[in-house]
Image 1 (spheres, rainbow, N blue to C red):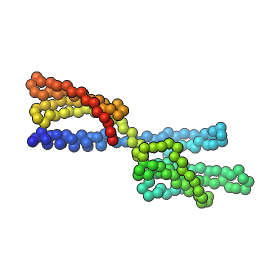
Image 2 (cartoon, rainbow, N blue to C red):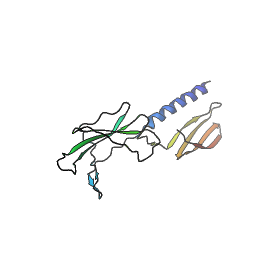
Image 3 (cartoon, rainbow, N blue to C red):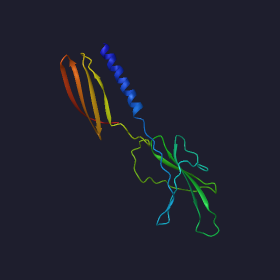
Length: 180
């Protein structure tokens, strides 16, 4: 019966370790200067330390991930420059929305066109650990061992060395599939 408790405790420790060591890593984007392209479009300057001037409010359940401010001068004479604030929001399902407002007037219309199809997985979920190592314990006898696993894309390869008793050793190789 003690072996069952040991196995259950090990399983809980393993799951807890998975949640602690598999946390997503967020990377800060470096500052970049604005660039005028050959077609006249402007690649906006990037400054992670700047504060948004008047950011729009994010929709319910959305997490703001990027704020942009654009000032446009009209090609028509007599029209003043207009500033538009854009807020990119990550929704709970992993999709993105864009919210616009302007201190110079009312936003009449706009369209958000996704150019890349996503699998609707929350952003910044990069798995950092592809190796695993640990101790194994047999429940039927005094068997102890060590294991090493490696994730290679959708496959998990592993090896294990056990001591099953006095002078009795065993090696195991594993092949499995990684799934979420």
